[in-house]
Length: 239
Image (cartoon, rainbow, N blue to C red):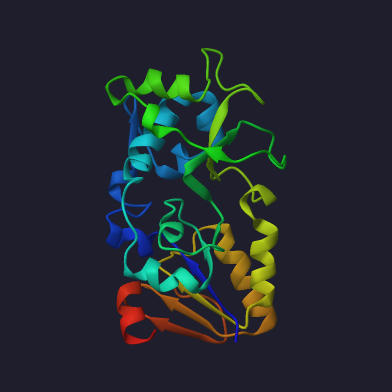
């Protein structure tokens, strides 16, 4: 049996990384509060790059030195697609995992979606946190004119108003879905497209699905088993 594991933010919570939709995700620009779904967009990056980069740095990059937990280590030899950008599965030793939404330790040139461009290391050690905004704009080569295609840099992260491309491994991810004889969703709220894609494949193939989460989202599928527990409890009791 080929089991495909698809993980979300709940798996990294034990490593001290807040889930994406928590209260800490909100950001104030002027007097208006923006949700993560509004901040983490290509439109915000283009229209207000200083606020976008400051939010991205403080919300994600500041956690770049956190380490993997027992679930990441358990998943190290598993067939894995993660929605998380924290890179903890790689730190735990999984060499073949697909980080379908990107990684905080990487960046790319700002490009038209669909272009295959190089993925490079993000030199976060060069950021001056005492002069954060100016330092980030300089690092990402963004002038007063805003981000420039094929000149400026962009975090290697799939934003809410962008679509899955091969730069993020979508073809490999879909192949793993179709090759799977079972899917296990861990710590995800099923609110992103990749989980819906996987569920569509699971329904089409009629394969069993497991949902692991303290408050599992109920899904439309004929062959699903719910585990209302944390991923750590799951690997202890079931895995």
